[in-house]
Length: 77
Image (cartoon, rainbow, N blue to C red; front, side, top):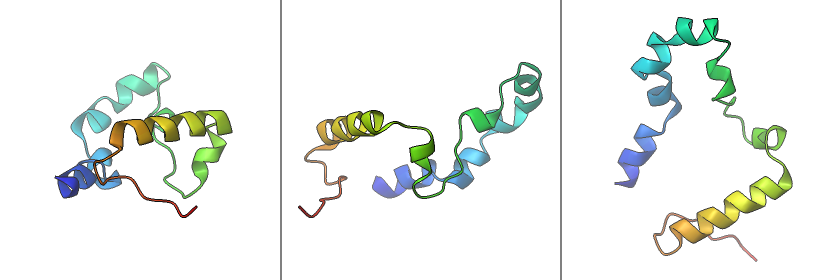
């Protein structure tokens, strides 16, 4: 299951989704660019988009939702 999720969420899969290609001209005419929805995919780039408070909230939500699933990384304390 995890392997399927990773594949479905890969940059290659997302980049090649039909609606990301087919609606490009329509979105661009409306002023909506895919770059508004996709980041560069560089490690640490999230800091250019999220405040520390937002990151803390996301971390808390991830912990709450995925606790006990084995999908969370255990951080050394």
